[in-house]
Length: 382
Image (cartoon, rainbow, N blue to C red):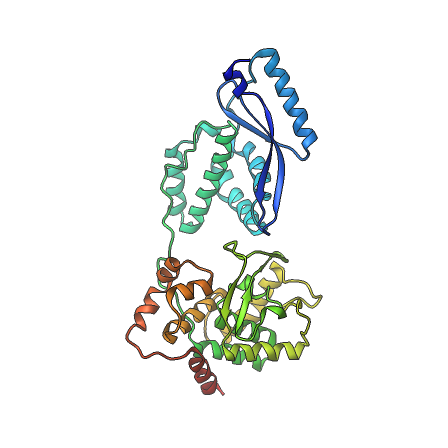
């Protein structure tokens, strides 16, 4: 067999992927090069199935001297199930749900029936312009383009497409168009006091955690009793669709300073609900499970938004409370940008970009400890 033919010889490999929970999945995969020089790949559930396909392709190569080329007439809609099955093994469930929505709303109507090689950079650029012109948000347009580019990357790798037309089209720039709106301690305490007045200690404690620890909502509702230490909170997981996953950035864990006032709030809540087991959720469902998307939406609408509107705060997002923590640490003056970024789970560059105006506002102001700001807000609200 010539060297060229030998290079096309099919082989079975174990394709390893890191799942979102940190574990490793192994998929038997057959790889070969077809007569057109395109690299091909097929994945199987078992090694036996992969080896059977390898043997079939090897027989075809031995009998004909080549393995059949690909007639590139597959549509993007035909590629979608293959891409989705490949993505499910690698990405978090929330990401897959987001991709499903993006596919049905933005990609399928425009490109679904088109042959892959008929989708040109010009067509992609026009699609981007049309979405922006129709009022689709920049981040949504960017996500749609990222998904389309990822689908073409797989298509090129499998020999279904000649090129990736999305890679040469500029995506909308990431970043905020406007500065963040920070809920200061006085506003947070107004909200917290209103929730306590309604007897809603669950919501009052959750608001306190989001505002004074700076965790993301999914990380906040994933806290267990063991995560509350003497002076820190251990953040090592998040809740997504009723199940635990790693943090958004894939990090193993991070620690956040536990302010004395927040520690009092959490311990009071644990005493009230008799949360004593180390693995007991602080904000679990009544059946002991983790909050699901419907649980979160109901809490946000019936408790959080209902209260913010009642006290004339409008409709801020629970996520906006995360900025309150940063605005406390900056005037405190004892936390550097790098340390603040570490606690927020950001890069220093992202932290500075997001909170540059907050740093500027407090640049020449006297330093005030975060606990003093919270205590003063609580004293003035009593």
